[in-house]
Length: 497
Image 1 (cartoon, helix red, strand yellow):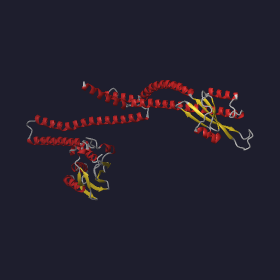
Image 2 (cartoon, one colour):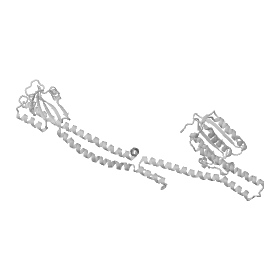
Image 3 (cartoon, one colour):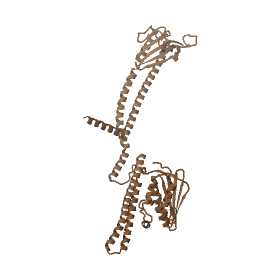
Image 4 (spheres, one colour):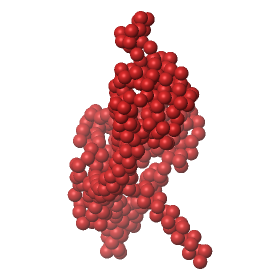
């Protein structure tokens, strides 16, 4: 039971994580929550604005009525005699109209009239009333009590200096009208609006929910097409390039995928070509040995000299087969990651001298002048064994593919970042259309001469792999019939990529 609960918990956790990581889910949530947030903001802004606007209008309306009433109070001398039926009727009508309470207060803070009839002849102590008596028109106030649901307004009763025989020339505050206005109808209206707004919001949320699902599906449809096209390619149902130009992003993804697909196809073609070349190169010496052996077997009475010649040819073919296998093994090692480089600080001048010392006998045998021009002392962080093999391949090729009485010149130089080895020769040169192909495995410019001097077609491929492992570069310039120059540039300090 515990195992079941634990498994269910883990499954729920990972399924929820997978769900939230989905771009479809995130688009849905983005559209839906944005819509809901906007809806709620509009709801609260409208209701809050309505309430503030309604309170402001009601306050302004009541203040206008109380100013008119204040003039009537002065006109009819109501502050001295409260028995005036006209004014009393106005007070009662005003109180009933706004479902509130009206009090008339004289300048001694005595309540002379109360529409509720419970506070007359009493004294009122109120900050708003006192302020109104002191400041006149500037003392008009209004206070909204949302908790108790009323607006309290004070309006001064002012006797104008031009009326009533006042010789002072100043307006005089005779009293204050204090009115409390009910805001129940505003609260009721807000409640009705809120109820209708919630109903509308619920409908909007449902519509937003459906709209968000549809939008998420529509927006991600191009990505679904990409997935479907990739699955068809993977299953082998299609071999065409993918094209989904709906968005800039899908174009970038598709372009990158098509480039990767083209590269993978090129690698696959290269691999097939490599296997074919390996099969051919390994089969050729075996075929030669088979022909030689069959010839000997068909002539059992052949002289010993013939046997020796044929065995020498068979031995040469065995050596050639061994050389091909050695080069293939070296190439496989070069294809591994550069972490297998055995790096150390090496004197490049001394290393180059040692390489040339081993190759000078071959150069003398071919009447080739081999020279070394060291322009500065160089120490670099390299794999000495691998880089020696690469340089030896270049110099040996320069000797082998040269003309009689030719020359090979090796120049070593350096700057603050790299050392540069230049291997130049006076050899047969490379055709322009072959320069880009010479680093391909088993590629030979002159196949007949390559076989004659024992080339396998793998040397330059191995050389290039070694130099790339060192984060270096190799360039070639050649003129057919005049010679070739290889330029190798390798960093003085190895920087892992």
